[in-house]
Amino acid sequence: MRTATRLLLALLLWAGLAAATDAKPTAQPAPAAAQVAASIADVLNGPDRLPLPLERIRPALIAHYLRDGGPVYWVGTGRMTPFLQRLADAGDDGLNPADYPIDALIQLRDTIDPNDADSAALAELFFTAFYVNYATDLKIGRFTPQKVDPKNFRNRKSVDVLAIMTDFSKLNDPGDFLDAFESHNPQYQALKKMLSLYRAMAESVDWPTVAMGDNINPGASDPRIPAIRQMLMLTGDHPGGGEEDSPVYDSSTVLAVRSFQQRNGLEAKGVIGKQTILALDVPPADRARQIMLNMERWRWMPEDLGDHHFMVNLASFELDEVQHQDIIDRMDVVVGAVATQTPEFSQDMQYVEINPTWTVPYSIATGEMLPKLQRNPSAYSADFDVFMNGKLASWGGINWNGYGKGNFPFTFRQKPGPKNALGKVKFMLPNPYNIYLHDTPSKDKFLATTRAFSHGCIRLSRPIDLAYHLVGDVAGWPKARIDAAFANGQTTRVSLPQHIPVHLVYATAFEGDGGSIEFRPDIYGRDRKLDAALNGKPSS
Image 1 (tube, rainbow, N blue to C red):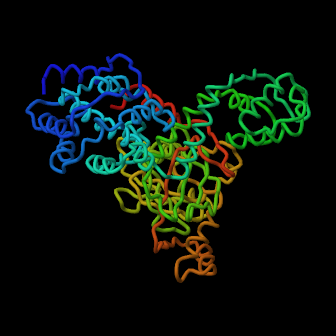
Image 2: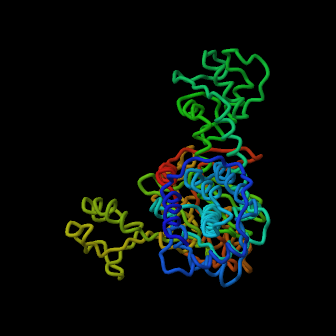
Image 3: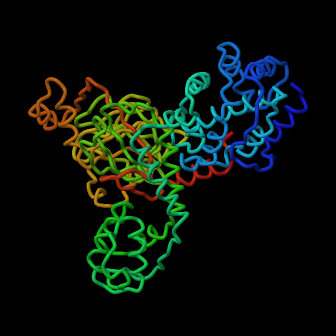
């Protein structure tokens, strides 16, 4: 291959300097497939380092085109233009068209010379490289999760690049392969449909805004009501009809406001206050972006969530128990405070502990308990055991003023009982982050709409019900035995014969009951971080 031509085209492609060209197909003849294949072999077998998009998958390209005799898939087949259109419409897939060198690929297509197999070979290889790139972005996302947020402990999934090439080369329509390659998780697919609606709304609707002011109570009259009613009709919460220009906050609008508040994680009492107005004022383009962020998170998730699993949504403060893709139970939860955020990860629940002890984390022991002990050495003696270098110690023999965060050989363990921070039961999913599900004596926290109060673990609103359900399914554990175990006050571990996957997710946009779209505030700022990562630089 002529080096100057190759480097020029590579520069245009990689730097994005190619002039914008008509994306419509052009009726250009191409070299014979055998000639193109021979030129591909020259490129891949040559001593020169290839442009980065090709070099980084060079072994797979060699295996596909040379070792396995993969066909010339793009040149002269009419498939380039449909793929270019898919790239231009990447927003429909929740991806960013700007991440892909569309104009440069168009120029590669349009400069294929029927008398120059080298230019055709280069086009073939680049189209394959960026097709693999796009398929990979669809399948596993664009970034390593923990590089976006240190509290996201999902491992980046991998793809078999050669398998992608082998599989798509068997299909006539490259779009069919991409459709099959993306996530089939029901939440992902629901978000994709909602994304289309919000993108259309963003392009066609001049979104109104509502000014701040006094709270609006049902039955009151306020000049902002017509605009609010209009917005609720656009969001699908208000059916329309009636006196749409009336300033009276009528019953049908109250119902619509409650629906909107429920979908946005607000206190659904129908009073229009600051938080409701802030949520109403979010334009469709911002909601579309929020949906795209959550689609990316689903790409990071395991392919198989488990036929029976638990899903804890940290952003909505809810736990769902799912079986055969149906939610069979749901309960409110309390998650980590902003300063002590609950991480995202997936792990199996392995056992249940009745009347648990609580081993206090080092940060709490030194940051919260030690200062109190320095003022009152017996502050915790009634409810906690203290261990020094792993051995049980006496509370009365320790001078707490001689210890600090850099010099603290103690471990505190709270005894079972009504004051125990874990309540009557905990559900263990062993993990490096010391996160588990548990009961709590602080029941009042469940009355709040925003329930981010814990040190990181998940507090359950109905833990005893869950214990009866899970332990009751274990052979030899009828309800009477469970009740007796709770009553005797002794710590009892019950191993689950089938481990149950537990997925901790941060979903700020998701499909709610009845197929509606629900949104939640970005309490941990993770949407902001992901948005900066996805839109701050190209993924390639």
